[in-house]
Image (cartoon, rainbow, N blue to C red; front, side, top):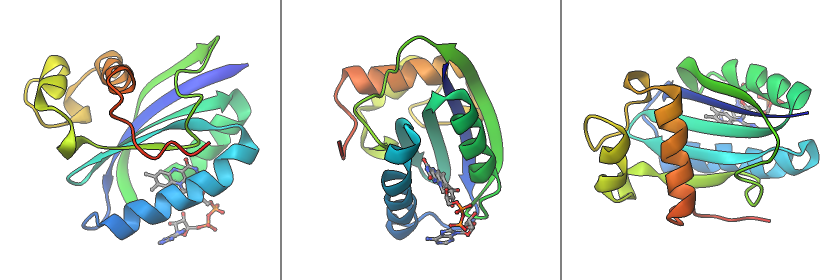
Length: 142
Ligand code: FAD
């Protein structure tokens, strides 16, 4: 049974490249053995992450992530049972939304700045699918 979980959060402190690198390093080390794939987006103090994998595994990882002191205000945007993965090629892809073409963000939100607290889960997921389609994801790692 595969599921896809999408959440957003705010960085607890100023988000620096070191924080993002540390999170991605842990993710890319841990996720392959767990069968987890996905994408981590960031912009300003905002994180938005999609996790795909087995239901129990995704649920357990989400609980660990929620308890991580490096971020706060974690909000579940979408949770679906799925028949296939969208992000199978990424142990954890990365998108800096500040570098994405603003027209992609504008397509799904009121302004060309990501505010996952102000968009529907469906719109946020559609944005991630568009990032996939437009090859905006970096650091393909498997
Ligand atoms: P431990 O390694 O024992 O860490 C316990 C706590 O220490 C953490 O909750 C955190 O608050 C803190 N901590 C851990 N490492 C650091 C560090 N380098 N710098 C500062 N504080 C630290 N993990 C994954 O395995 N896969 C993911 O896809 C994933 N995505 C994440 C996305 C975000 C936005 C965040 C904030 C974290 C993510 N993590 C991910 C990390 C996850 O929250 C756990 O830290 C990790 O899974 C290890 O779990 P653990 O119980 O062994 O924690």
